[in-house]
Image (cartoon, rainbow, N blue to C red):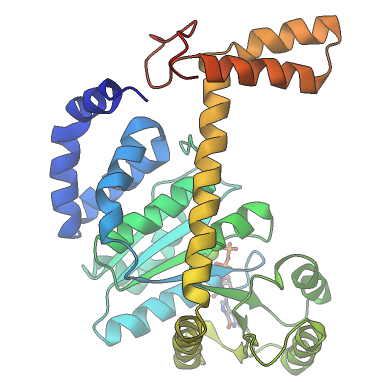
Length: 343
Ligand SMILES: Nc1nc2c(ncn2[C@@H]2O[C@H](COP(=O)(O)OP(=O)(O)OP(=O)(O)O)[C@@H](O)[C@H]2O)c(=O)[nH]1
Ligand SMILES: [Mg+2]
């Protein structure tokens, strides 16, 4: 790789990012918001910002909260944050909604503003959505978790809406995953069985004030008992909560702490972080190769030609991949045509 490229990058972005990084350490909300916009917008600045902050990450308790729409995730996040604040701990909150075109703090922000947490300097809240996340929502979210972690928040809570692959990707970037279920929806239990049973570290049966809570508890317990586990594995607890009344919140915090302690003791924390690193690097690589194919190897033209000639997809991909390898990386089109340096 040419050393000139990163240097030029640094010169272009350094003054801005230096100031931003300094204000991040003070957890200034506007700096945090700007930094998250930087990682959402993708490109060189995203990479440079994470590069500068990465050394300060790894300290926060990171918790994902996922489950079906309306299960009470935001209310839970709000009460968990309040409980952490009561202990003097700071909380960064990301609300990720892949189905929403809007980002910038509208959804969860409004809810929590009503509770008064948003005026608390120990709490930062931000919504993230598809729009603007050029490098992919999961990647931007993972970077945003790093930002909040590096900024010194004791907790980083990530709420994701729904139960699709996007959510799985997002929650895989935290240390503890809470899956929220509610009584009275048999289909939800099915969905949990099919999709996210594997990723749950703690089950929260919210809306336990509703009819059918005991039944739902038994259903969940049954599903869990059928899962593969031995004496060395973590058996996800099921905790009943009534989030608006903060009932069961202390128990959820306690379960998170127990899970974290087990992760450290068993070596799973390091294992999970290694797996997360692999996932992130592989995602970045995929994005880079695809971007290089588009920008330097003529992806669109090759597709158009290939379609007309009925060339098979493997042959088109082979040709593009050779084009990527032959072209000069890092330059704004300067390396077009390739000179063999990229091997
Ligand atoms: N009865 C009852 N209602 C609850 C409980 N928890 C949340 N709610 C209500 O359920 C509704 C949805 O709560 P949210 O916290 O917005 O749920 P959510 O899962 O974040 O919703 P989305 O982000 O839209 O998927 C609100 O009206 C809450 O007041 C609970 O334990 N019991
Ligand atoms: Mg919500």
